[in-house]
Length: 288
Image 1 (cartoon, rainbow, N blue to C red):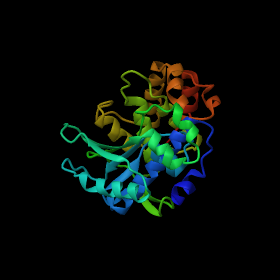
Image 2: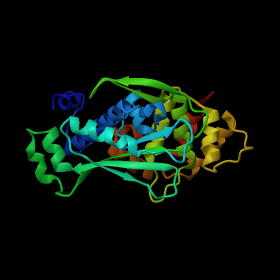
Image 3: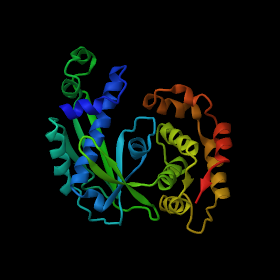
Image 4: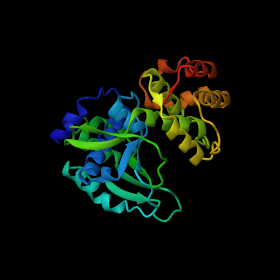
């Protein structure tokens, strides 16, 4: 319990939703710690929005843990690591159920969930604040999803990062240019079925604000893999800017704002969002 109290100290809690976000983020780090103890990162690496939040200080909540193998392996057995995650969670007095997904589906992505009743988790994380329990739905679940891509895009670069809580651990993570390539791929090629994922555009602005270069070789492989471009397409800084400008013309940025709003605290960061804004800031994109 002392470890959980330490991990909660960094959060500014102003609402029930803040409390839910804090629980999910702490569980995410517990999962990473358990996977690290299992030597999972010998064969895999961490990427995506949550990697950007935990290791590069992105200021928004991110729901999922995204991993990818270092080398393609369609027969990869994820089961062997589930017990390490379960043990890590239970060692801290938590009782999340671990459920693996996609075991029979024909997909490169293997998934698992940690889930438990939200009220039960509030009792563990906030034992002296039971007044919140009455407004929580009895059947509501805290869920943390983690995915692993067994057919990874090539040419990404990785580095080792360290965290001290819940226990000192080491994680292999995409470097910033490779993370940026993954985000540009999402901005360009993600197929939104019902709602634009404004979080992609929020992260895109974040990368530009840090003057991170795009790993262009990795990005091209991703775009070819997703069939967004052909292998003979010459991806340069100029052609990339053109692709992005075309994409921005298609986006309803008011809808994009609605998607990202629940994941950030400073909504004024969205005030300028428009196709003109995104086109203008994209002039300064860097590639390597």
